[in-house]
Length: 113
Figure: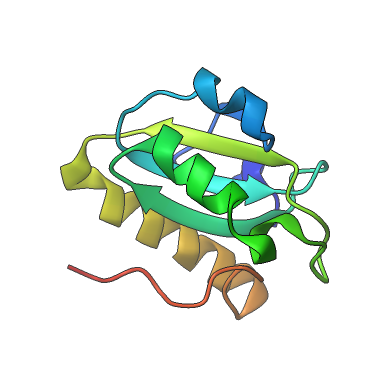
């Protein structure tokens, strides 16, 4: 599944490189790590997009090549904190409907509540 298939749509992206962290807002939202081609590797949520971006870059697993490719893009959608769990869960369900599993870098499902 590619990022352009997600609903709600994600249009903003930054290359997954530390020097580009400053281009991200300090806002809450949902995000997707993808390959160069847009294949989804990870779906997440955060109360601070810029900080979470840096945390992922500091995680060796998120920077290595996976069976589906290497993280190249960080797509994001700014959303109020009260909406991020719903959006993340929706994206994960969309992915699981197509692949019968979570994205390769996701270890657990988003909480329902």
